[in-house]
Length: 130
Image (cartoon, rainbow, N blue to C red; front, side, top):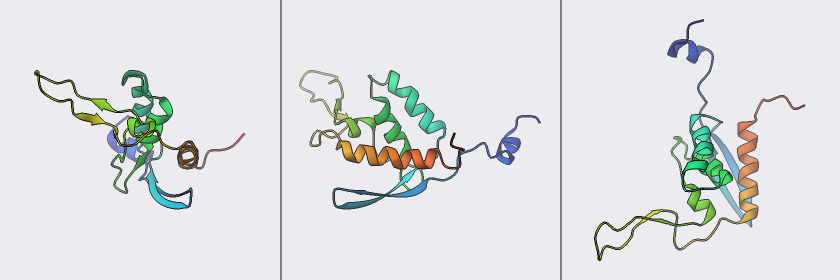
């Protein structure tokens, strides 16, 4: 079979729409969407090595969680609690926040575990367990 967009579509080579998951944590219930493993999640894993050393699990969470349309809802720095600032261009300029939230710390460890479980459930759906 020749590799074309049509042959890839018929082979279901493109990831499906995000899957809605409900996360219960610390008395709260959140609905989120998880992308099945795709180019975006693979790039999130790869970028963990090149984007200032962002942690691979933070990259996996940030690249996997999205809204119903597949748009990212956070960055790896939102997960780790780190803040990335711009470099002032001229004297007197203040650095601006590029990523992360200076008013928030690292994401709670139990919440991270629950998010990773939800991501794993979506990304490993239908795979045969050994």
